[in-house]
Amino acid sequence: MEQTDLDELYSWFDTYVEPFLETDEEGARNIQLKIEHTRKVCEAMAQLSVGERLSENEARVASAVALLHDVGRFPQYRRWRTFRDSDSDNHARLAVEVIREQNILAELDSAEQLLIEEAVRFHNLLEPPATVKSPTRLFINLIRDADKLDIWRVFVELLAQPPEKRASAATLGLPDLPDTASGACVAALDSGSIVRLETATCFNDFKLLQISWVYDLTCSTARRMLRERGYIETLAASLPQRSEIREAVSKAVLSLST
Ligand SMILES: [Fe+2]
Image (cartoon, rainbow, N blue to C red; front, side, top):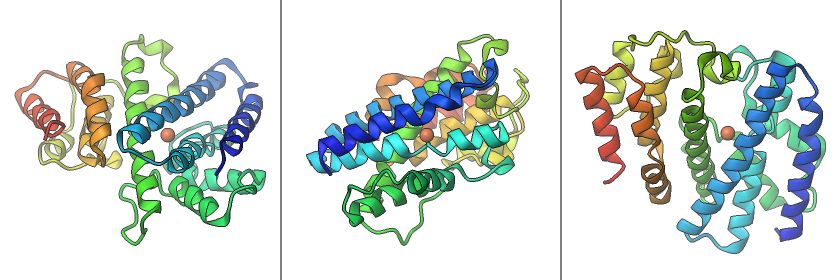
């Protein structure tokens, strides 16, 4: 993959997303959130590429994966007005549909096309399929880490805003009950597992879920970036200050340094 191929993908993206902004204020805010997310995932991916010593070509493929991983979000929101896959459609599958419909990888050799499509397709699975082989595995891991790093950023910025200013789709419609956190979610985090979305019943549960992603990071550069950015500490500060929650969070933070 050449740099010119990547540059063309970047300009395709800008043109593609523009019409999705032509909607009401709330819709435009939600779309804008995903555009910004994509840009920041590309930035995080660039840092991961350096930290993980990718070759120049690998770094370009990784950038393409970062740019395209969430393009399914735009048709998803237009059609269903939600980013919740369970209420609409799998946004990674939709992204591959966009990539194919728009024929944007045609200039690349078929192995790279497949690599990009597969990394996009599997970026949002709870666990990536065990049968996926290297080098696809590398790009799946990288996009999952880069994506999480930026979902944390979005979420921390969201928490800093007054509730009425928050882009509605980002909170997944979960009720914000300041003193409530489900025992099952706290227990999952405490045991070093990923909190499952279907067990989250309130906004604090969703914070616990996001903290539990520390256990899903694959590369040491991502762990270092997360430590430097301090997102986990910020998320934890907005949770109910109970000892079982504090302990579960401490374990998660500690795991980043090992
Ligand atoms: Fe994403």
